Image (cartoon, rainbow, N blue to C red; front, side, top):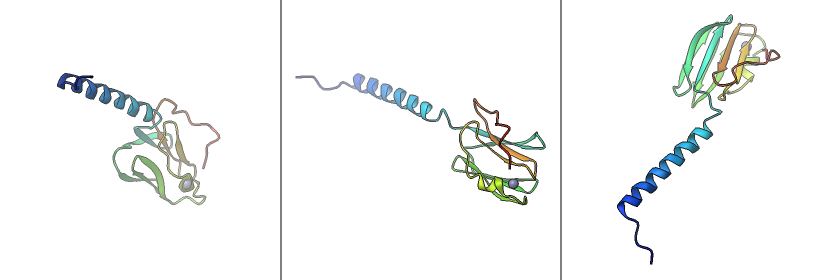
Length: 119
Ligand SMILES: [Zn+2]
């Protein structure tokens, strides 16, 4: 018969669980950006935390942060490509509104946006 788990063992199990869980969360959130940089004319005008729901407007582009995702809610531009870009939340993702010269980038390991991305 195995003896019952002692209190000491129980604490150890909890510690192991917490550590592995933390590791899991870290791995899962590796791709998730933590902040987003908004630029107008290539100049940083705002840095948003993806953890906070917020709404800001620059150059007629209404940028919304909701549930860790960023999207363009409204824009005065004509093509509305930025609005159709949808939500972004991963490092390196971005939305560009070329007519209004506004760009939104999720910060992370890969912040360089391809030159082909316009809108
Ligand atoms: Zn636009």
